[in-house]
Image (cartoon, rainbow, N blue to C red; front, side, top):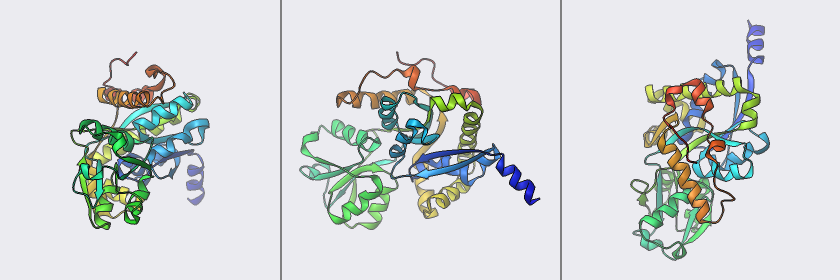
Length: 310
């Protein structure tokens, strides 16, 4: 029996994937903790970093086989290596981002102060959209590049006076640092999307494995929707996060694993921001960047995009 189990495990195909450490990436954690990767013949190692976006660059030169991060991170890294492609819209961040201030009453109170921003992520897009919507000038604030997990400590030390970022860091900061408050939520401002990314070259050389990987994520998505308490326990276990916090945070995002019109709109927002900042090397070729084949192969009904932008 032991030999049989060892042989079965040896037959699993190894993959290394990467993302951040918050419940917006729950499908990765649930597929791992729920045994769905193994069920589909995969032995998956999940590497985690300060944010999902910080792990997307590891797809360049196939340092990892898949990553999960913001819409902006994908476009940035596709410019570095056009083999980095978006394979699925993973989560729609409904109530996930906030501007937190320390010892200030409102956004105006942050003028002339230091704002922590995780550059090149949804944090940056969100902050710029807040300023645009509220008719505030970027030059009225000093943006400080701070990774999301460091924002709580930076606020506590007084290195920054506020920050714009995703959960769980706003909630954790409010629980830990006196004088902090939510100054602005994402509702009505910006709801970005986290995408699952892979390397096109690797997919084409490992199509069966790539499809098994996508199937695992689809099944994890199903589990999250059908049994949220069980999924929350898996997420809390993987992240070593209090179950109460995971349970509170997970309803703030919509779990998708599909392609729909708002998926493309989110990419267009990221592309426009990079263009406005003179950081876009060339117009995005959506036919090369948006890779819907894996979703189409596993669950074709999840493709709701008819045409890609030219």
